[in-house]
Length: 138
Image 1 (cartoon, rainbow, N blue to C red):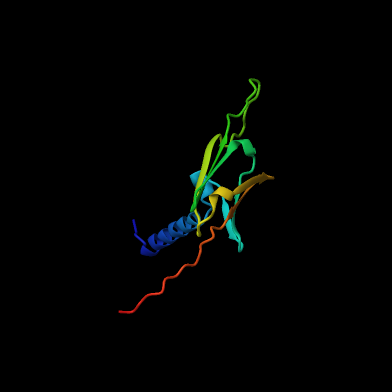
Image 2: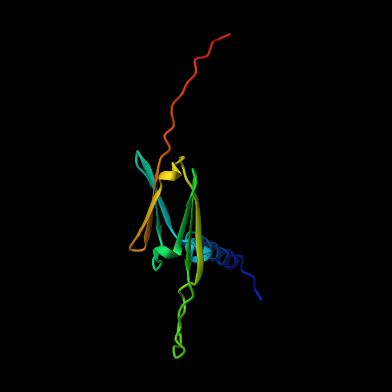
């Protein structure tokens, strides 16, 4: 049996390419989460989360000054006794996403709405007073 180092090299290269392709795949496929966008205007942060197939009664949002915690839970699927499945890929259970915000927000004034499977959370930025103190040089 002849050992070819170039064949071994090619096998390692193919394995590396496979791992790199998997690394860039969307994380939600493996971790049971969902994609989130965070944008900013002068007055507020806007968090948008894709939650297709969820009703607003199945989604819970908790907000603090510097984080957002979104949990969405599907109830059990209703299956008729005379029904057979060829595929059953829709998940039952809880999906969760915790996001740390880039700036402090006034969580007491936060608002959330759900439309066409997209959860939109509006978080007014916390107004910070610019205070200063004159120092005496010694």
